[in-house]
Image 1: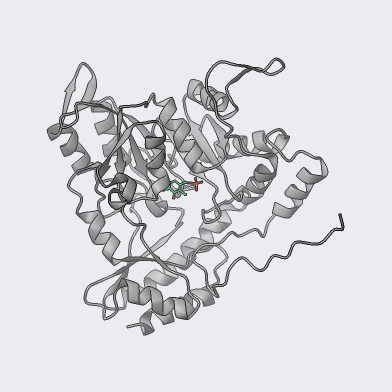
Image 2: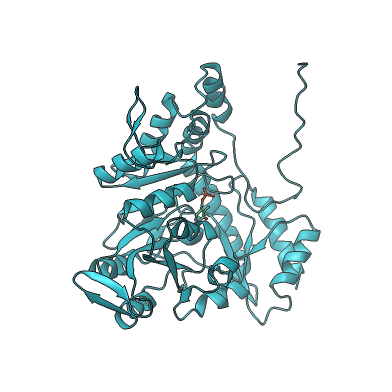
Length: 398
Ligand SMILES: *Cc1c(COP(=O)(O)O)cnc(C)c1O
């Protein structure tokens, strides 16, 4: 066949996109090496190296790669023993991938509200466990369904951290496993308090990262499971590689998955991780630039990250007050006409078709934020002058 180069345009039609990959480091060099050595699939040295580098960066005992964050969450739930007929407490304000794996296993989600950090409200979580459940024989049972509640999935929304001190305490009290969906929070850590120095994803039993195209780091698609428990890491690795008990004779001891990252993806990941602190520094500078501009402007404010953390500044949330003359959807449209990409928060998950009949508990704050927040451009290759263009466009939309 005659070679004809496939034609690809630029990544985006936007003049200022919301969040795009930044591949300005050693990406091409390492990917080329993978191609040149023919290690393109799940074998090859980059996968182990990337796992080790992530573990070392977040100070976890180990890391197990996955095809994406969703796969990592799926494995995590299995590792917590969640199965058909169990229930799992989840947030409603999140990306749907945090919840779908519960259903993959035939389990049911129970939706919780967020607090002003946009992450799970620990007060409401406690009230739910106290008033809507029965705790006996070391098991938490949902009064309304009679089913066992096994775990909590906490999502560190937009690079913020959930209130892990409170959540871990509640989980311990009621014997619930906690899975940290840290897909948006790689690099975020506590800078004070009891968990000072602890990275998002390394506090609970299991943590999950994602390397999707819009995340802080990308491998095209990819994910990682971290844990302090050696047995969990071993089993995660086993399950992600088809539960092969013997390499030569293809003996399998349970139903496994084809979830391991490829060497090509890991090549990208290694190059990306080399730049993570530069990405965060740029995102912090841009965040502060937006913050300064909007704090002076009536009707707008940039939502803060928790004060006891070093955030990774993944996504910026602009809160449009009712007093502002232009409301959310109108602002999004006006910016779109200027080539500036923004978006509302995800549709709340308890309102999505597959979950409309699921149990919810006192959801109020999430609705409020859903109505008022717009995510504004935050790529790590956004220049200060791009930020100024966005600021002017938003101010002029009033
Ligand atoms: C991105 C994301 C995921 C899933 O990650 P994928 O790698 O896209 O599967 C899960 N949860 C949240 C909150 C996310 O933002």
